[in-house]
Amino acid sequence: MFFVCCFIFSQDNSGSKYKKRVLENIEIDFLSSYYSQQGNNASVTGGIGTEDLEDFNPTVVISIPLNDDDIISFDYGISTYTSASSSNGNPFDSGENRDKTSSPWYSSSGASKVDTWRSLNIDYSHSSDDRNTIITANVSNAKEWDYESFGFGAGVTKLSNNKNTSYMLSTKIYIDNWIPIYPKELDSYIDVNGDTEIGFFYDKIIYDEKGLVSNKWAPPTTFTLIDDKSRNTYSLSFLFSQIITRNSQLSLFVDFIKQEGWLANPLQRIYFSDVNNFYIGNPASIPFYNSSQNKDVFHLADDIERLPRTRTKIPLGLRFNYYLNENLTFRSFYRFYTDDWGVNSHTFSIELPVKFLNHFTLYPSYRFYTQTKAKYFQPYNKHLSTSEFYTSDYDLSKFKSNQFGIGIKYVDIFTKFKLWSLGLKSIDLNYGHYARDNDFQSEIISLGIKFAVN
Image (tube, rainbow, N blue to C red; front, side, top):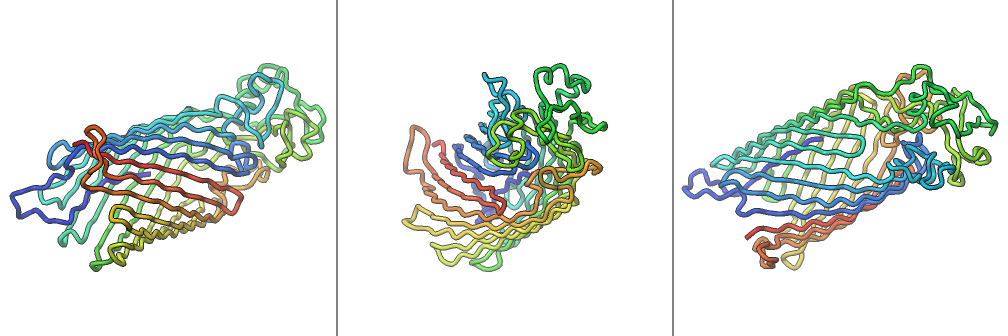
């Protein structure tokens, strides 16, 4: 991930005694979104089961002009989500009814069902007197129940040719750490040194795939919890933008992203096809374990997701915008992505903003995406125990997706509507529907309101 902040102006003031401020007043953005998803390939339960999730994300961004040339921005967000799949980190404890076992198709009432993610970003930018150079710097912190991230970044943008041409170079570093949460059965196995007669396992009956009582379940002899909890990301980004004609603009970009450390998720289970299966719960439900009819039996994990300790990602892309007239614009985007895990993808999107009634813009959009699968991906219960790396995360599978969106925006640069000392600059409301060809779909509604402090 990387962040770029740049400001481009249409008037050259290099020969004028008057210097226009980069930002005239303090601006405050209130943003919020509601996101929901449904699917049947939860990674926490090894590639099958409910992926139902709901998320509410309010954010406030305050941009403050320090002087004519400098701006500092504070971006604070809270994301509160309810995740059926994450709750199944411990599917063996269903709240007050501790004798009941959940299944991959139903949400447990474990502590990991609901969580809150918090983030703070501080961004600084300085524009030169002629407004042809913009220097940026930023720091960030984000934390949730099993992960914490610190970010640092900087960038420079140069404009030339009467601001018709721009070049941007930026870099970002994330120093992250897992606060690892493991599947309950694997974590407990380590705690009791493999003795399934005590501790968590004391009152649990383990069944084999025939529904017979068995005490032979055990992870691989090489199984260990993670010892290096770091996960670092380094990115370098270059962007070139050129106004081609009065009506058209072209932008090209390339990023180089390097990750290292523990790149797998320790909560995500793996099941091997060449070892026996063992379960806790109602043995009568074992024959239809892979069906949503299964409400009360759970397959004990063979291992956690394991992936290489390094990953190199290279996205390349272009944007082309064409201004048909003062009311209609055509915006297009294409990106090619490749990495050394075997994932290659293509993204294409178009947007057609339509301006009406002077202050309003309606912008329908469409996005198409396709990718190949990572070489370490296999579905539920298809991995081999002899493999070094494995994942059943469908984000790394082969799939195609379509996304349709519609938005409406109100803009008033003169801030005629006042709320105390706040002048309303814009309101932006969006809806998006996303669907993959593997029965995953999601919807998002977002709202943004920008005020200027007068």
